[in-house]
Structures are given as structure tokens and as C-alpha cells.
Image (cartoon, rainbow, N blue to C red; front, side):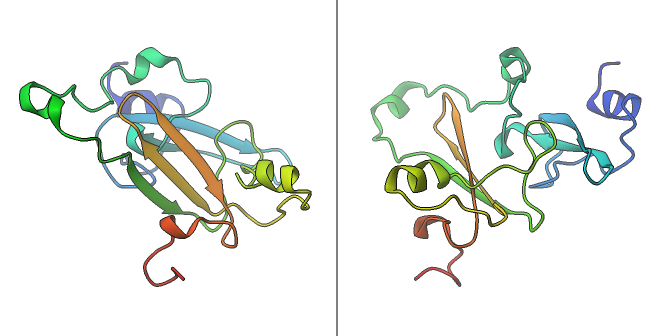
Length: 153
């Protein structure tokens, strides 16, 4: 097995051969998930630009990152990370079978507020070039800078 399609089909994937989030066919990785409480399970494909699965060995992402700058590009100021924001009403499962908790829970605990119990329907991926950061947010806690223009305050 050498192609993503061959690997995906060998693991029972019968769905689309594009990234579940952005629709690309480039740099795809197979995600196998299951929820023991509901008995639901499945497979999906996701690209590196939309998020790295926890536990993935780093070498599978060697060709996923942006090319190193050359020449005059080295002198250009850093414009900050490339940010991609995705929404999935059912939440996101990255490790195990439980949906990811709201990223704000760490700050809520520090502030003495109760933990968020809403569905973390938003995934924010920040591409810093050398690494990605991924945050999961419920509607109420999604930072203003990541809200769609129609929802921003």
C-alpha cells in the first residue's frame, strides 16, 4: 500500500478521498474514530493544514509544512500565523472517542468560573510555519478575532 486511497480503503474507509474540512486532496491522513457510548464509528481523511492528529509520528508530516523562505523573503516582517477556522456542529474528536473540550476551560478554571459544557463546535488552526496550534471553542467562547464577519461584535 502506497497511496492514501489504498491505505484508507484497506482500513475500511468508503467515504470521499478529500479532507473532511477543506476538501483538498493533498497531504491527507486517515482518521479512525469510534464512540463506545453510542456505538458510532467511522473513518475520515484530514490534511495537515487542517490539523495534526495527536500521536501522529512527526515524520509523516515532513512534506506538509510550507517551504522555507529564500533570498529577499528572509527580510520580510512576520505577518503572524495563517489562521483557519472550521465549524462542526457535532464537535471535534482528535484523540480517543470523546469530543474535544472547550479550550477556554483552562482560563475558566484559573478565573474560578465553571467549566464549559457546551459543544466545542469551532476548531481554530494557527499555522506558525514550524508548528501548528489547534484550539477548540464553543459558540460563546470563540474569540472575536476568529468569529465570522456576520457574528463578530
